[in-house]
Image (cartoon, rainbow, N blue to C red; front, side, top):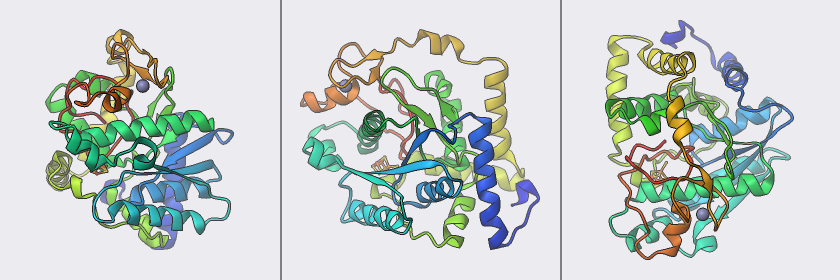
Length: 316
Ligand code: Q46
Ligand code: ZN
């Protein structure tokens, strides 16, 4: 790990990763040992590595798998990996939500019936809603997602190039709870993608290697490529860009006006917070044939964000 000037063998690497996660959990006040955490697991390396680390650290971490009905068996295979992971850890609880069973359509079916809406945008909206609902109903203090440093930096670059203040204001390792919204945390935010992959491999975690078919060509991947090139020229660029952003944000209380201007109120249908007048975006989606508001291209890797009108497409 050139950016840390550190080289570890497998045995010591899988001890080092949890120390980094524990440090991030404490530094960004994500949750305490007394609080229950809901880990959003996709069957991929990041989320399963996260669940593995949190269980190993002794946190009360349950998993949530959301079956989106994607691809020729992609969702089924992902669910199988998540279930196999849970089955191999005595006491681990995996909650499963099947979107088609609960709401009557898979994500691709929903996208087909809502012409003009991008699959990833709809998918992110549905996942955020389901995560919040399960967290509320289950009494979880926080929802943890497997976003790593590369994910965070790529989204930060996208949002910065557009000076998309609404999204920049919500990019943080910990987003506090709001009315009807659980706290959202990203305990892997200081680990690189290759580090979470290495951790999963050394730990023998069986994860889905394939990306979601809809992730192909996603703009996030393009920005990750650019950042990797920058990193070759200047080691540590990713950490510098992300950590200095967080520091400036805290030091100068950036985005305070934006946060204060947010008019969040509970959706009359589902109770989750929204800035939209009347029903939230999720409830409008299933209520109206055209799905209510328009959406942009969306971000392939879902993240934590209040349900609100999407002014620009770079939600994270
Ligand atoms: S699952 Fe959903 Fe992602 Fe697939 S459809 Fe797009 S948002 S790419 S993280
Ligand atoms: Zn609603």
